[in-house]
Image (cartoon, rainbow over all chains, first blue to last red; front, side, top):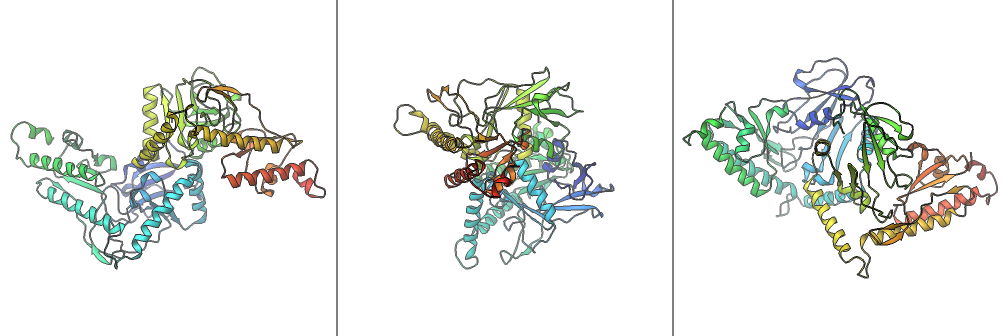
Length: 292
Length: 292
């Protein structure tokens, strides 16, 4: 995507710190591009020459706030800020990176509008990004642009009387839903002897003017034991994605916090059942099949 | 995109008969994929080994009905049927190719819904196409699917009382608009000594039950003279795409028939002015700048 100043003859290394969003690897590898080459975990990257590091903050899958980790001379940093919205994380300060990516899909949930935007300092990089979007998507349709304008209008109208009106604006509403879900999940997991969730400190959010919690878009469940997550979840009709897909330990699994309310409640019930089983409250042969 | 049974070590040749849709070339070349390689005009392709021929019918840019032209042993044919709808062309018979692509963007104009579909005979090819869509677009959103279902519902409701009701269904309406535009354009061009448009015979359309005309989505203007189309159109504030972009003679230019009504009428006015000029009705230095 970014060929700016980089040698055209060798593919540029593409890295992200593990655990990284699994889509970067899948998308970078699928077409075997001569422009870039997926090199995996940024923590272990030490090749000479140009590279691109994608920094996802808050991170998918684990919700952490991140900075670049490679810090070699010839690198370009791409900040994926899909989740830097007040329903997910305290907005602690304005960001000022060279390339910053945003999307409606995580801001308001309008994934189908296929609208994202970027703030880019270098004009030539911006031109190349625009060219790539033009070629890969045949341009952004008027239909999408009209939808995006409407969404932005409603969002901004809702925020106009922020901190004065009684009714919740979109971000307050979403923050409440995400917090309720996180708390429900934490209540289930605290009964487990072997499962845990990451903990985040409260921080001051400039958007809400309060100290707020992090409410990640994904639960990044960790197990003390060697769990065959794929089988375990499938047996209990839960769809998750193993840590291995994110370049992480298979003792982790990622589960979406975005499902419809009924599905989320079913998830909590089924996870409770797993936790009961793994805590040894169920006798018989079933227990042994859950832990490898 | 299609790696089925093909050697993974060499990129598969990708061809289309000129004049071909310029996007195939741009998209195939941009990421320098190791999976496929753009080889240009199918008419001159004679390499050994696997290849993919894209057959666009009716064709973009010139509206012709097409069959494959390479016909070597190891080829795969991808039929792009974006324009095989009754507003553009008589629907003469059901098609039965191995891989057939469709899109809402040209069927109803809902380009922003980013919904297309494919009819594919080989299960494994279908699986790979689905995998590619999943990776390249992170799946088709529920929002898009709901819109597509709504669009299909309205379309099919409108066609239910077809040939009995007084009101026009969507395809009759679109056919009428496209025919009116084609006729207006033909009326302008017939005054020209050097410009011409392709002619298509009427054919029996199974959808309308009548002999109907072709009303291509693009005007594929041809000039007898060596025209510097880019300068000529720019001077007259018309945006067109030179034949060269489509692997064709630069004496051709493609102009969209899809613009909003006011813009289409302006286009007709401005094209009339060009035709007046090139017919020698304008004296002075301007004339010489139009013909190279």
